[in-house]
Length: 337
View (cartoon, rainbow, N blue to C red):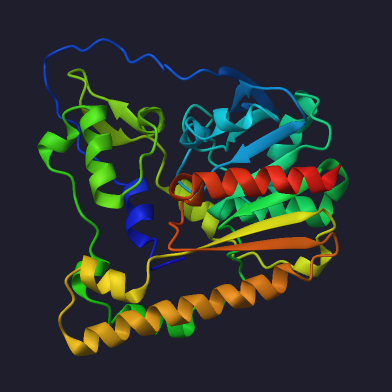
């Protein structure tokens, strides 16, 4: 997921310079309809847990790298007709504690289990986006008796992936596709303005609440610096974990997102050079080939795996293809009964 989603990831971790105005702005109040719990997972470490309510079996949402559970603030309520929906903000992010240690895959998975225990969640369906796939795999291999099912939202990336060819091609991509956009000072004047800029830059309508939990708010209401320490994401991604998917004993639903076609990308980024067009097509083809290898791996899961491929979908598939994701989650849950 390095290239076609590089812009999206960069925007999630964008360092912002405080505006430094003397004006005062009223403190922001979260308008989202959820309750907030703080669960102690070890001495001095508490995790923010969102509870959107709902009736039915428990369903837990885990965000991707650089994001909090508030990224699901618009999506989660659409599941409450059939599930009691929760979201966990992992350590290091948002309102959760930001300790210096504890970012290994084992520890993050243990954090999830601590939350399940504290809230008395019986065999929840766990839905994870992107990097959360590592935690899902750990749950399915080592703690399958604690979960009812696992849903991978474009989250099959694994330490087993071989990016050699992909990385070599990526360096030859057009500069316009390798350089993420930057917000102007006017884009940072308020969180609503920043969200609108993000929509234009990435095409994703991420809840404004997410940005409030990612960034500080300056006295004048403008967007301040990213509040997660720089070492956190590096610590989480540094493990290069590999998983034997055949050992996953919980039932699996895996949704695979393929970006827009090379032809659409060429048009979007105004790529006119014939050689660069060939590179764009080659990178896309290489990524699709890697995705097919991931699909083959997950289909070996001992608990059984259903795979749904969504063409033209964004990496944030629960936003770009919300109806598809909701339909497949409901279908998957029905198969578990």
